[in-house]
Amino acid sequence: MSDEKSWPAGLDPREALAEVDGVSGAMVHSTEAPRGLMLALVLVVSTIVALVNVISWPALLGVGALLVSLGVWYLLVMRKRPKPRPILSHSGPYVLNAFLLMLVMQAGRFWVPRSWWEVAAKWVVVFAVCWYAMSRMRAAAIKSRLEDANERPV
Image (cartoon, rainbow, N blue to C red; front, side, top):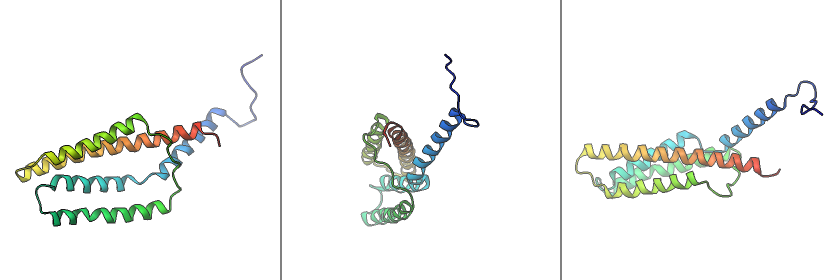
């Protein structure tokens, strides 16, 4: 008795599985928001956190109004995309990066810059940490959706 099974001509199971894996990965990536939207969101939020104790509140709310246009962009983009499969439970890395994101927002509120170069340094630090956390959260969400899709019966 041999371990080799006879497959129909022209069908390689490894190639078929690789193709299915590639298609499912592309489908999950197509349901996520574009990276440009995530970058714009991180830019605006980092600017707000960096300027919170430096400029007046009306000017800060004016910068925050950019979030409304980002929300409209998100709704218009996601309306044309397939609906994402809900994640049953977020993974540990996702939650850890969400806590990192909240921590940097709170730490940014405690750092009061006294000059414009400190505002620039605060913006760079907040942007870098937020971009890292958001990127890792997105990657963890995509990985969780792929794993969940592979485990859930159709």
